[in-house]
Image (cartoon, rainbow, N blue to C red):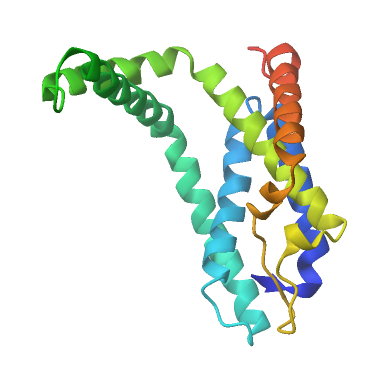
Length: 199
């Protein structure tokens, strides 16, 4: 929640952050994490503030943004291992459903979680590329819709003179999934071919 006068600058930040993440997310991964952490933190903390205090909203957004940026930056070091461990545990549960009934043995879940974490470290480049491309594509689309004044993306103009971003409201459009996938695939291709190459 931000004062309404900030809606266009905030929408432009979404567009730029989305484009950066979509087409250069792997190369600039830590920067992308900081930007998205800042945006998430600012959205969450400022939504808890009262709408009558403009200065309080801005300060809350800045403080929440800094905390969010710090959290996501530190999560970088363990995030990929957690994703891999989660996939390993999922494989253990899904595989056990074909072998026996009930829950799989604890050692099997732990073993596959460890193997998943290790495996994810070997393919982390591809995980980062695909994730940043698709998250960036969504953010880019929401930012463009907000910048052109789309009521679904802004969904928040009211008599209270605040701007609330609802990142999921754009999903209500029938064309949205197709455009999102197309931009996400384009971002993945650009990153794998150009910006995400190992140097």
